[in-house]
Amino acid sequence: MEIGAPKAIRALAHPLRLDLLDLLGAIGPATAARCGRLLDVPQANCSFHLRQLARYGFVEDAGPGDDRRERRWRIPTPAPTVRVTADSDAAAGRQLERIVVEREVRAILDHADRRDDEPADWAHRPGIVTAVVPMSAADAAELEDKWTELLAPYVARAEAAGHRLQPGQRRVRYFMAATPMADLDLKDDDGSEH
Image (tube, rainbow, N blue to C red; front, side, top):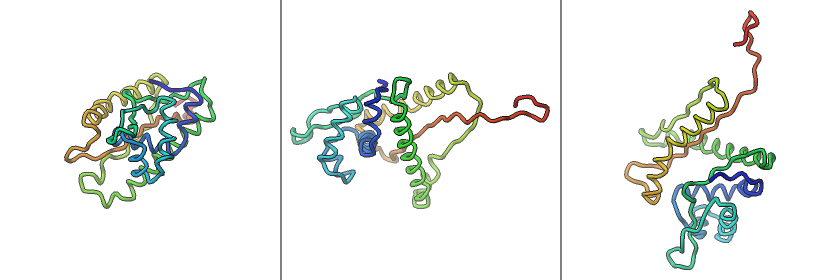
C-alpha cells in the first residue's frame, strides 16, 4: 500500500511516531504499554500516537494484549510505503524526508561510535556502500525495486519468526537513499560533454 496523502505525510513527520514504527518493525506486535516501557515514554503518549498512525494505515490492530484489555499494534503486511507525489504537501514531504535522513545518519554514526565495542564479526558489518553512477529516472526506480525485492525475504522471515532473534542474529537497519546530484558543467577541454 502506498500512502501519499498530505495529512498522512504530516502525521508521520513526528519523532515519536517514527520511533514507534521502528520499534514495531523490530519487535513485532506490541501494546502501547510495552512500547512506552521500551521507549521510556508515557503509555498514554504511545497510545495516542499509535491511534494516529492507525488512522492513516501505518499500523493496525493486532488483537488484544495478554490481559485481553490492551490493544496490540502491528505494522500491516505488506508494510505501507510513503510516496511524496505531486498531490502531496511538498513542505510536509521535505520535512519528513529530512527527519528520516537525520534519524538514519544518527543511527549510522551511533554504530560508528560503538564499533570498537562490537564483536569481531559485527565490527565492520554491515558496511557503507557509496557509488555515483549515471542513471535515468527509470534506472533509479528499477534499482529501488530490486533493493526492495532483495530485502523482502529477510523481512518475511522476521515476520514469520514473530520478530524473535535466532542464534547469531541481530537487528540490522538498512537505509537506501538515491539522491540525484546537482548538474555539473563537465565539459572536456575540447568542449565535448563528459
